[in-house]
Amino acid sequence: METINITQSVAILCDGNNIEKSIHSVSNSKQTMINFDKLIPKLLNGRGLNRLLYFREGKSISSKLAERLYENYYGSVVPCHKSADIPLSIKAMQLASKVDTIIIMSGDSDFVELIRHLKAEGVRVEIAAVKETTAKILDEEADHLYEITSDDWFVYKAPPKPKQSKK
Image (cartoon, rainbow, N blue to C red; front, side, top):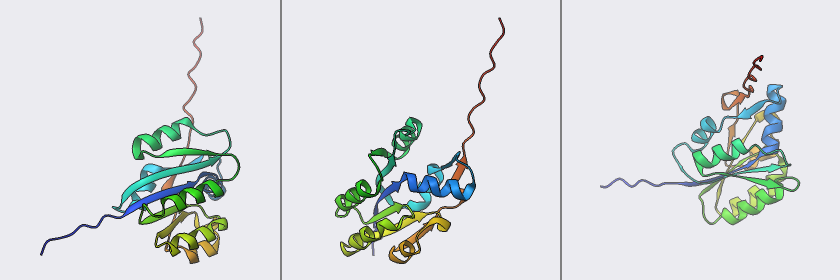
C-alpha cells in the first residue's frame, strides 16, 4: 500500500496592533517584538504556508519588518486606515475557499463572528495570541489556541550609535 502525504494549506492573518499591545503589556516593554522566525514554523507545524498578512493600523510600519516577512515567507504588511478588524475579516473570507486552515493572530473578541462564519464554511480556525490578553470566547470558538509566550518574542535593542570622531 502506498503512503499518501496530505498537505494542509494555511493562511496566517495577524492583527499587528493587537499582538503588539499584548506582548508589550505582558513583557512590560514597548521594545518587544514577535520573533516570526521562531513563531511561524511552530504555527505551521509542517503544514504549507499559503499566505502571511500582517495588518497594521497607523503610519509607523517598519520597512525592516515588511522586508523580513516578504523575504522569509512571501508575507506582506497591509496598512489599515483604522482597526485591522475589517480588512483582516474581508481577507479571511476571500481566502476561505483557498485554504484548509486560517490562523488569526489576535486575542480580540471582535473576531468571534468571523470564526463562526469560517468554521461554517468548513475552514479550520486557529488563534495565536497571548493567553493573558485573549478573550475567553475566542479560545472557546476556535479549533485550537496557540499560546504566544516569551519564547516567541524578543526585546529589540537599537544598535549603539557610532561615536563621533574628533577632528
